[in-house]
Each structure stands twice: as C-alpha cells, then as structure tokens.
Image (cartoon, rainbow, N blue to C red; front, side):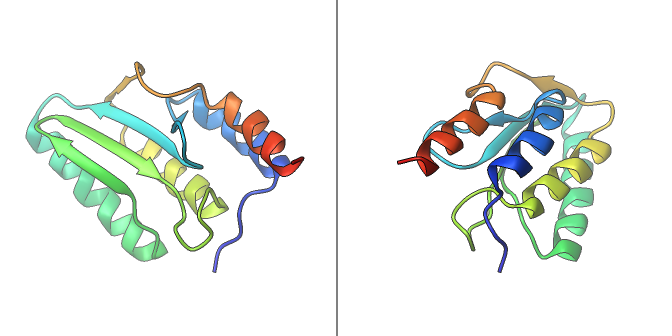
Length: 123
C-alpha cells in the first residue's frame, strides 16, 4: 500500500510538475493534465504507451479521450490521495507526451495543493 505524500514531498515534487502543466483537482487530493495531440492516432498511441507503463507500475490513471484530447487525473486510491506513485507516473507521462500541447485552462494552480494539504493537517 502506498502512503500519502508528506508536506515536504509535496514541496519537493509538485512545483516541477506544475511547470509541465499538471494542476490540482478542486475538491480532491489529485493532479490533472489535459493534452492535445495533432490527431486521434497520436493520442491513442500515447495512451497505449502510458497504459504499458502504468501496467508495469501497477498504478493506473483515471483518464478520458475525446478524439485528439487526453484528460488525465492521477491519485492513489489505496491511500485516498497523492502518493509518490503519482509523481513517478506523471513524470513518465510527461516523457511520453513529448510533442503534445498542454491545455492549461483548468483546475487550481498546483502550488496551492501544498498549502491546502498543509492546512488540512493542522486542523
């Protein structure tokens, strides 16, 4: 079973993911990225490569595909929030998505997730 990320882990890893287009999901301890590919075929090929990586890790994304758009949410259901598995999978996804455009008009900035999580732990 994976463990929830600590505040220190969040500060260390989430800002670099925010720089690549990952954003906090409002109301959930999760991150989301939306990618636009040039074609359905490119989007589907990307999803196939991610599926193989996810299967190897035994950690799978929540995602949807609409023609050339792939919408990905990462969270770890075992611990009901973000774990280092999500960070590892997000980085693999970023490498596999080379050439795709990031759709940035969604969610809260990922930097806010650190503050949100830290605030929840202090209560």
